[in-house]
Image (tube, rainbow, N blue to C red; front, side, top):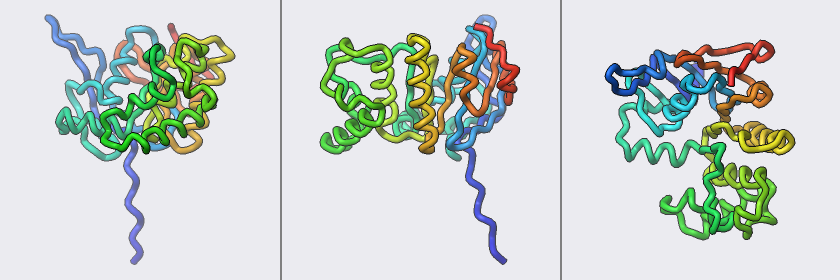
Length: 240
């Protein structure tokens, strides 16, 4: 009898995850949440300010630990890992892009991208090659020697994307990545995310922008710490 191949685990599994902060009284900012996100997915998370979006992103990105429940990343139970193990998993598997570009103004584009692997133990020559490939992928090979202060907002965000993706992470988490960009530039950055997703990278975007959210294949809405999965894109109403 031929055995069926083992099922591939979801990239992200949240089982009854909660997050509270101490009081008095304690404040539960994320209520019990169970969620499955497949590898290679393209998801947006929307909701009003203060709804718990950033808390959820911090948990998914292994920047914080849940108060209760279990979080498995690519089949690994992360809540049982040490801080060092979580840091190593995050460094090799998760990239981050934020509204503020977090670039060092005195460093060149290449140097800014290289900073993400400074303590990786990989020889510098290999890191430079990987950084240059990432910079070329976002269309900025001709700007590798420039500093961020000479770049437009869209170009700075592209540098941030190159830095986040130079190690080919399984998941790219973007927190309001178009918040500081005009509509045309926002569209260009979103096209870049879609290209990365088409190449197999899972992309998750937290946004207030309904137009940005609607570009994802799956929309998750969060209100007052409660997650509503599978919101219909056509019916999406984002309270900003």
